Amino acid sequence: MKLGKALGVQVTFNNFFLLLIFIYIWLGKFPQVLSIFALVFLHELAHVVVARGYGLKVVEIELLPFGGVAKIVDLFDADLVVETYIALAGPMSNFFMAGLAWSLQRFGLTEHPLLPWCFYTNLVLGLFNLLPVLPLDGGRIYRAYLARRLGWKRATEKVAGLGQLLGVVFAGLGGLIFAWDISQFHLLLLAGFLFYAATREKNLAIYLLWRHLTRKKRELAQRGVLEVRQLAVCENVPLQEIVKTFVPNKFHLIAVIEPNGRLMTTLTEIEVIDQIFGLGSHRTIAELIRGNKVNS
Image: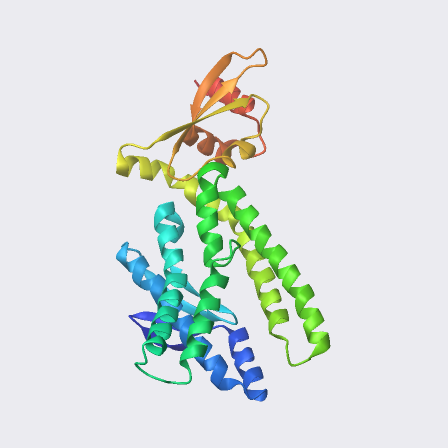
């Protein structure tokens, strides 16, 4: 459902978010959820402002039951440092608002009754979003850190797995709380959302990996120079296992080693990727080399 535009960006409601609003209205807690919605919206706007500062296009802000998503064009093609700063912008905006609320109250500039609530809620939102699990901002920061040595796919799977685990833990805690008081269903909903969103991130890992890999040739042509990362592999290793180790922002040279420990040949990552489309990812590096010899 479309809500309107902010800073030229389309703002939409997720259907589950609308359902949650109706539940809160029924429970008589609509003012609270409306206030949290406003804080989440400002959190997402912080992502938008920083992304635009790096020249990225933001097409939509989608408000979800327990947060939001700023949909940024080509975010996954951006530098890992850029993604880290964009992810960090949301929690930092919450800490800024918490600090502002505390300062207004501390120095007696206003005695508005919502100030303590604003301080506490922003602090919780900021800290929660910094948890190192996907789909939270902290998970995106942690993934960017891990991707430098594990590669994008393995880093995504690891951090998304932590998100699924947190969802299971929250489900257990939420079930106990719900059994005590049926009006306290929030943690159960949060658990379901976390597990679903983390699973979706994990399923997208292979797609994001191929986006990174297929743009490397263009990136090399644009920059002219890329830092090299070398890998030593045995000739019986499948191509798909090799590309899983590729990391962003580096160009890979693959040294193929014979059983006797001697160097057989050296391949570039572009050669490996091109052959995957021709031979299939399940073929071994030895089959790639034999195919090159036949064609030469």
